[in-house]
Length: 355
Image (cartoon, rainbow, N blue to C red):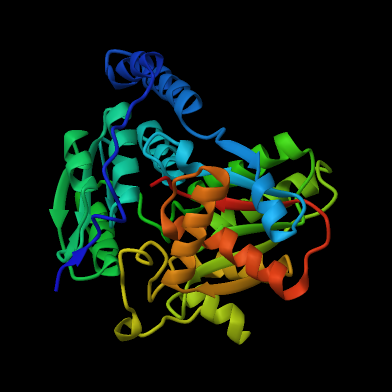
């Protein structure tokens, strides 16, 4: 049975600045020394990725009796999600190390991010998508020059095969859970630095949507680094949100498990709402579980109905048009507020994608 994700991962008109295109042309030009090409690509990254908006959600504060609530909106990245941060970081590393091809498995958003990042770096990109998945972002990937191949029934199947092909073909492996995990964690740690730049301290809680766990783990590591350098007075409590009963990281935290255990693939019920959040195996689950425990954070499951309702509230109260799954961190944070009536302080929710 095919999985229709057309309402979930929609194609966007990806636009980067003319200045970034000029730097990209130089990064792709092999007449330049590799060091120069890498520096030109860094100019592209600095122009296009990150520095996303952090805004105070005053209307939500009044409605929900919470102070102070900030929304970190990752939809401002060029392909519309936080995935651009790790995609550009991986392509930067691939270019620096002399690779000419990069590969990744995806259900939509990460593939689109890698497609753009690879095009701007002058890298060939091979994307593996499960046989049963359909997303408009395939057209976007192909229009950006990526080679899209079908493999396997699940995302996990596609990741395993993409990694295998990387080893056999000497391609750069940009999949989660591999030897490049540290690069992805560092890229996501920059979100903590950007929050600090505006708030000048760490918030009390940070709510994050969780799938593989890399985003939450990276943000936590970023705040740990700031605290160790004496920049912040504390490390925030990390609050994870994911689809009800369908994420192994949340399952492990709520059950008090010491490690993340795989779920049975048979229990997963994928929908156009929850697909970005669910999986039976989380590739960076241990890192995320450690962050939640060490920070004395929390975890919440959300139903599709709760995610859709949160999306509507964000649109009505704050004028943000976002993917339902990207509200999981905010919804989890508000559940935490309902449980313990959070005292006046600073709270941040990461909103990971635009609609």
